[in-house]
Length: 65
Image (cartoon, rainbow, N blue to C red; front, side, top):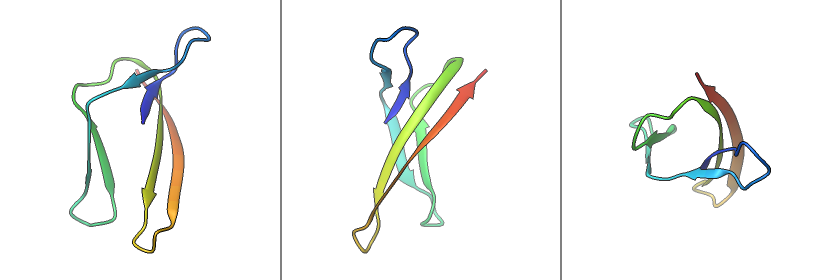
């Protein structure tokens, strides 16, 4: 889930329309938004389930200038 934290204490704004695919190397997950992201701070929350059914998750925060 890709979100853009709100300017106030409101809930974060969820970014919709993200295309997710596994790259040709079989190891890289690629998330491509439908449109370029505007300037601001973003938070990407992700999870995958491995072939042996273990769940791996993480958070990536970044800024677009």
